[in-house]
Image 1 (cartoon, rainbow, N blue to C red):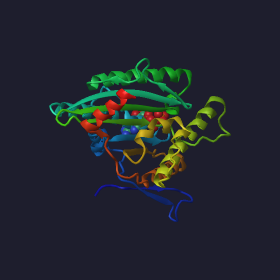
Image 2 (cartoon, rainbow, N blue to C red):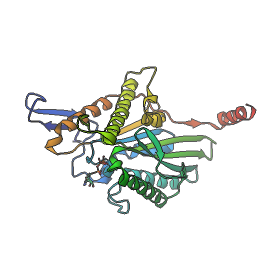
Image 3 (cartoon, rainbow, N blue to C red):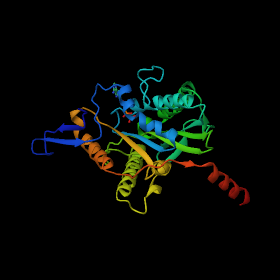
Image 4 (cartoon, rainbow, N blue to C red):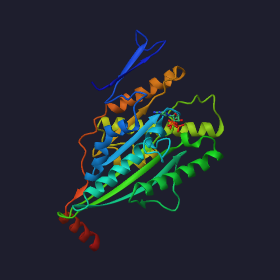
Length: 307
Ligand SMILES: Nc1ncnc2c1ncn2[C@@H]1O[C@H](COP(=O)(O)OP(=O)(O)OP(=O)(O)O)[C@@H](O)[C@H]1O
């Protein structure tokens, strides 16, 4: 049977027997391999090529394994590479398989949000066309190096910023003339730990406030989608603005929630799982593919020409 429940044993107040259980779509143990984690989400990745917008997050406190899951500890080791690399590899394989029927163009963009400022992790190249995993590895390395440069100036910056790899796909169906466009955001969020404001000052406090603000904004967007509100507050943070097209009724969303086994951080772990439970309860409605038939496209082009 698939593991879907995780139980946290606490010495104090949560539940009568000092334990609290949370249920999700799937729970991975410490021994889960990168391959197992990826194979579970593979269908979601593939649906990008069918025109669905997709958003994948890694959420959790600093040091809980977000970067390990998304990028992997070593992009040069095939066994240990993370979701980002595997996802693109999969897209390239499908692109090759469908070559005779659909012509796909794939490009990527790396964005970092630090203190509510959005920057391009790869300078001078907002959206870069890619045709192979080695192109992607090179870009990721470049992006990673730029983040490291930042971390010498501001200690431990990587865990204080949201890092987003966006994959843009455009497909041209050679038989029907249909064009589809979709994007996938792969997001390594900033550490979610609540920082006690009395303990930090200066840059650290500023960072903590910005992170709290953007993660609460993310929670608020998800809550208002869940309540099917007519107004969804996407504009309350750079993060939700960036992800707007992939968070909502027409997109597919998956969140990885990372927790640490350390007893010292059990309160943080429970708050992480509570956030995750709130997110998991959201029914975002049926996703819709972004396809345009040849006729509609021609009409739109005419409108564009005349306007
Ligand atoms: N599943 C795992 N197997 C082996 N090592 C792991 C695993 N997950 C994380 N680690 C190791 O634990 C350490 C912290 O992980 P990682 O850097 O991914 O955390 P993080 O949540 O991204 O932290 P931050 O928010 O500070 O960036 C790293 O040394 C990483 O290699």
